[in-house]
Structure formats: C-alpha cells, structure tokens
Image (cartoon, rainbow, N blue to C red):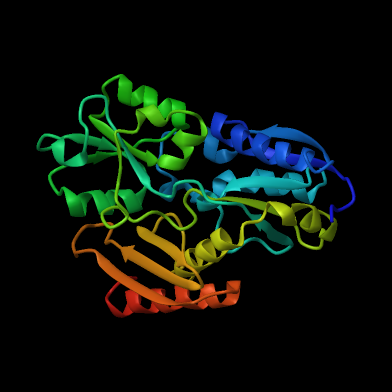
Length: 304
C-alpha cells in the first residue's frame, strides 16, 4: 500500500554525481505520488580541495551542511553516497533507507594503460583515499601515489591534462554518470577491497519522521542493507574515520553473509592485515555482529 502523498524536499550537494543521485530518488518518489523538489547546497567538503579529507575532518564534511538543512526544516531528506556517511550519525538523525547497490568495485582509469600491472616503474597514480593508497602500495610498491581531490569531472580532467598516469575511482560513480567508457578495468575485490558502503546510496532523515520513513520503505533494498550494515560495523568498531586505511566488503549468498576486511599501516611499515567471517544474517543486528567479529580479528592481528 502506498503511503500518503507528501511534499518532500531533498537536500543535495551540487556536484554532477550528487545531483544524479538526488534526481534518481526524486523520480522514484514522484512515481509513488509524492511532490519532490531539490535544495542544492555546497558543503565544506566541496570547498576544501587543497588538502586530503583525512587531514581536514573526514567524510562528514560532505554531510554536515545537509544535516543542518534537515534540522532547521529547509529539507526533509538527504541522499548520500553511503561511503561518505560517518559511521555514527549525530543524535536526532536516522538512516531511513539503503537502496540497491551499484557496482561496489574500484575502477582503474588511464588514457594509456589497460591495467595497473602495465604501468611503468615509478608511475604517478592519483587517489586521496588512504584505503586505496595502502592497497595500491601492497600491489605495486614502486608507484608514486599522489593526492587527487575534486569532483569526478575535475579528477578526470587532471588525468587528461597529464598530471597522473592513472587514477583510481569508484566504478559506481562513473557508471551512474554514463562515463563507463573511461573504465579500463575494474579491480577484482581480492586485490582492491572496496570501502564500507561503496556503490550504495543511503537516505538520511530526522529521527522520528515516521511519515518519511514509511514513504521511503519501498525504495529500500534489504540485501544491500545487510551487506553495508556488516561493512559499516567493521569500520565503526575500528573507530571508523576516513583517516583510517580500512576496507570492508560483504557478499550475500542466500542467507549467508561473507565479509572480508583489510587494514593497512598508513606509514607502510607493516604488511596489510586481512580478516574475514561468514554466518547467517537475515537481520541488521546479525549483519553488524559479523562485522564486529571481523574488526576483532583485525585488531588481534595488529590493526589499530
């Protein structure tokens, strides 16, 4: 049964990818009879482009202003790339819905080289993700990893200008914007384990807005939600901030959830620490317990 039609304002960042995500949700809600408009905003994360996120306050920089708009009533919901959402939401906010996941893998993007293995010794690769940095260095210690900030179009432009021989981006964003032809190959998850929540969209509301939670329920995808709940639990248990080089990725096979995680030393003094677990998960609590078990394994093996 459809919930009562609502007037819904979506708070969104104004990058091309963020607008695609908000418009995607707008179309799905409008198809269910709701009146939906967008409130475009520039966040601190969009403004600070000269430093890596881990040095200026983490991924929450992309979320804070949107939450303020929810708090003061200018907007009703915020659509986020789930990997940008802090593991602990501030008091008074709730994750109302996790939508079906796009490709969760990382993409290798290069004008000249087909695969990471083809890059010459000492080639410059662009990424500002500590997770990607430690995983790339484990695969190719000779590479020079240089910071790469900005929205998707800016990052591709910097690559095309010759500042890097290759860059690593989330495959999901490229596919959503119709830029899949830029992907030379997708990394196998065994070599580049994705970030918690990568490729999934989450919708945030003020806690207690049961009208919105009910309206968003048909957009939720439980298999994705179980997977990302486990992944985010690993990150939360490890103190999950974006200044931690942590990867976590879960697969669902029927009711069996398989989760893999990896932690790297940002100073690259120690090898990657890996852990995994499998178990039955039909509820978010069961999925989170599996994630917490993997985090405990990582800590036992030296991750911190």
